Amino acid sequence: MYSISDIIEHLEELTGLQLNEDTDLFKSGVTGDDFHEMIGTYSKKFSVDMDRYLWYFHTCEEGNNTGSFFFKPPNERVTQIPVTPKVLLDFANKGQWDIDYPEHSIPKMRIDILINILIAIVFVIFLIYSILH
Image (tube, one colour):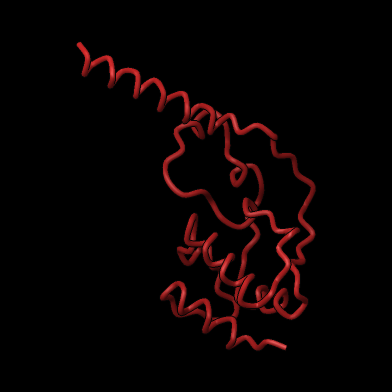
């Protein structure tokens, strides 16, 4: 069995934050890629099966998402569920991510990302055109 100090020491080493068992990691600034990296190393170190993990309930994406002005990304379509060291301790001792997520609907196609790709393509075409003329 793991202890809360095992979890907190691991998280503090990764994040550089001072944590207690009830610290909401997202609200403390562990977001985007940092959150994904933290969850990845946590799951490996503590052998937690992450098959049921849904990232968009716990963090946001990294970087700018211009398409999100028109279509919400997954994390903006659900209510955020905090991840704390206490929660991570419980899952480490169970050996699996164990949240019963609320009923929700996330589109299979990410139109916000498609818009970002189209904007990038238009920009590259414009840049090439500008260089050649």
